[in-house]
Each structure stands twice: as structure tokens, then as C-alpha cells.
Image (cartoon, rainbow, N blue to C red; front, side, top):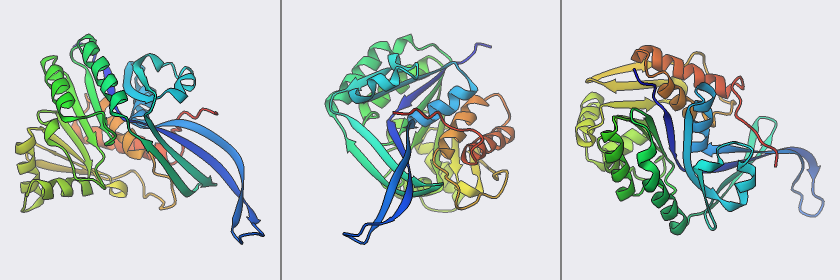
Length: 300
């Protein structure tokens, strides 16, 4: 059987992490003062899925668009040839940590239709070079890459190549936009996102009936329902299979990236039966959040 390549396409978020230490209070404003101890850079969003999958299989490519300001940094990652760089587009999250506790987060978002259109045009020119029988992972963080026309075009091309298409759309705070992903193979959402989809498409009834109706609307054969500390569920062939996490998760643990690592392993373990596959993916996500599967940090 032909070996499948892994292709990650999606919105790259630049995560900047600042480790700070409380150094008392400011005399002028009676507010806390902090000392910067360390700072690091890593790939968030679709970049986290890429990192998680690349640890398992080096045969993984990543297509995205990012800011020119990070072009030199990406040279260290050996993936810069697949990244388009935009002059105006910026997607950054700055997180300030005291030990393992997130103190606060600052987001800097400047979306550029020009830069995204250039990425889409470039990708469509080269999409036919992607091999048949590849795993295609769409990581849609709602930052502009997956416009309706672009998404429908590439799904049509990938289906002709007998690729397996996985869709992970982050829509916790925005209404889901799932119709453009019609005819994909897997839809990976958390429980709240599925509930939002039921409301958007006016689907009522018991859970199995709602999942069945949504499946018929989207023509997607398998749903993965992430339920955080409770693990996940798989809906396929009109059956719902549940899987718990390996151990009880401490509420103080940093769970950033757990869902991305779950998805990465779920794609990698495609040859296992569904029970083994979701159990293994839960374990991989768990190892990420307890620190035994660290993401790649780069000092900047």
C-alpha cells in the first residue's frame, strides 16, 4: 500500500511566551511589578498540529502564510520554503507566565486579504504537485485562509487524488462555517462547537439523531467530538464510541496544544482500529500537557 504524505494547511499563530517573576509593587501606582526571566517563540495554531505530527512522521509538509518579520526565524525550522510571507498580515499571541500559571495574554491580529490571496493563488498553482493518497489536514482558526471558493476548489482536487481530508475548525466564539467542508472525511470539533453547528443548521432531537442529520448535510463520514478532560467520542456508521483520558487532569495544567496533538496522532495512527486510535491520541495529548512531549521553543 502506498505510503501517505502528511499535508498540514492552515492558519499559523505566532506564540510568544514570556516567563515573568513578581518583584513587588510599584510605588507610583500600587500595582504589581514583574521581572522578565526568559522569552521564547513557538508555532501555534496549525503550526502546533504540524509540530505534533512531525514528531511522529518526518514526512510532513506545512503550507501557511505568516509575517515577513519572522522570515529569518523560520530559517531555523527548515520549513520556510512552504511558508508564504506577507507584508501586512500579523497573527500573534503574547502570553505572560508566572511559573506554570498564565498571567495574561495579548493578541495582535492584522489580517490582510492581499497576503492571503497571494498565498491561495500560489497554493492553487502548486496543488497538483501534492501526491495522491496524502493525509490532508485543514486547521481553520478563522483567520482568512479557508475562504469558501478556495476551500471547495482544493477539496475537489484532493478528492480526485484519493486523499483523506481532516477538518478542524475553531469556532467556539464564532458561528461555525462548515458547508464549505462538505465531502471531507473527518470533522474534528469540540462538544460546544458541535452544539453550535446543530443550532446553525436547526437540528433538533437526541444526540445520535442530531449527529446523523449533520452527517447527511455535510456528507462527512466521521465526526470526532473532543470533550477536554473527559476525553473524546467518535461518531461513525451511526455509532458513538467514547474514550476517556489516561488519567485525571489537574485543573492547573496548561492544556494549550492538547487538541492539536490529539489531531496529529489521530492522523498518524490511521491504520489502527478506532478504539486504539482514539486511546493513543488521548495519551499523546496527555503527554503534551504534562510536559513529556514538549513543543519546540526558539529563543528570539
